[in-house]
Amino acid sequence: MRNVLAPKALRVRELSRLGIIGFCVVSILTGGAATLRATTAVSTIALVQRNGRDAGSTSSVALAFPSANVAGHWIGVCVRAGALNETITVTDSQGNTYRKAFQSNQTGDGDTFALYYAENIKAGANAVQVAVSSSTTLRLAILEYSGVATSGSLDVTATAQGSSSSVSTGSVTTTASGDLLLGVIMTGSSANFIAGSGYNIEQGVPGKPNTKLVSEDQVQASAGSVSVSASLGAADQWGAGLAAFKAALNSSSGLGTGGSSSVTATPASITFSNVPVGTTNSQTIQLTNGTGSSATFSASSVQAAGFAALGLTTPMTIAAGASSTFNVSYTPSSTGTVAGMLTLTGSGSASSVTIPLVGSGVTATGVLAANPPSVSFGNVAVGSSSTINVSLSNTGNSSLAVNSLATSGTGFSSSGLSKGISIGAGQTVVLAVAFAPNAAGSDTGTIAITSSATSGGSLTIPLTGSGSSSTHAVNLNWVASTASGVVGYNVYRSTVSGGPYTKIVSSPVTGTSNSDSTVQSGTTYYYVVTSVGQNGAESGYSNETMAVIP
Image (cartoon, rainbow, N blue to C red):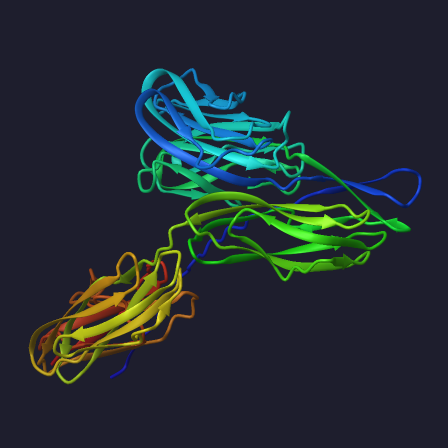
């Protein structure tokens, strides 16, 4: 007899974050003749380097930048102090002047949070010193940016506090396009922070999973309403602040014989974030000559190790109204942040074009993890077979290679993974594990995997199952759910109509059928099925079906 179950639809939601970086160009015609075009453009702001420190209980702490600061850049200092109404003083070893963007209290937890900044900073090695008025827990993050205005940079600010898992400062309206939006968010307890839409978390203090202070940022394309937001893994006391800072203005000119030329680069700057050491990332740059005459570049140069211009050949001429593209790559040889510049040297009367470059290298890691970490088949009738899928994921930032795989134990086998296969960063492969008992009784086994992963390189997955000699079995079949994202089904059973039900499978069934060989003679059973999504969410019960065992 075929029993048909139709699981309820399961909704699976996938969130994505889009960051937008843009620039605005204003053209000014001068001199009374169409032979010169001067352009004033809003610079694209880029993070150069950052650092963070959890200083414990103290009244003063110093924190150095990993590399020397660049003259004319901008520094932001994010502070969390474990007492209310703290008096905060910020200085540094270069003698830069710091101003307060905002300072506020989180009264529910008794903390102070603040953002201070320094404009048009001096070049050289630098350590930021933060002092507070009482000895208390002190945490801070420091960030260096290029492209921020060298004076009068502060545009607007907003602060808020609350107690929930959803953080927001509320909206304010910026007055200039291309602003740096810098947010400071603190919690009373350690929290899992998820950045708000369009934002990147740049620094967390302390590191995961004990974070209580984060800084997040983005560059706003056009002036308008903005806010800082974030999500927490659980409800908590929080404080949040937003400060918007104006971009610097760059001026350049281009001359061409008998006309004018204006060449712009898109994007105007490039940042490579968290590139594993020894691997290469690349981005495309487009050079566009607006109107006027052709522009010729006689040479190109790239400042700073690890960067390279690919497909760029000089001398190069771009006709009026035309574009040319090439790639810039970054291959870090060590961890840390470096800043450089790509320069295209103008020939004759054509102006040079400069494109700021920032790259950060991180340790290359491959991390292998199994889900589920162990497999239990429960009771399987002798002479039949049951299959459970195991997801093997690389949660690291670089590829890993499988060196060996061995399955042991009577009745156990596996397929879908072999020696030499490569699993890329963020990728998952499916290992199908089967159990086919040839006699009644309990069986145990393992799947042993070795790989080049720096974590989980030697992975063992325990296997258990029992052969059942029952002469009765209930074969269940159901109609597949039409909802997107469904990865399997859970089967439930009860001896009472309407439940309560008990799950009888150790992990979701990937097909649309299942055999229950653990039934007892003279008993009536009631079955329901649920569908399971990629994130583990489960639908409601299907309709109930009944089986009477003679």
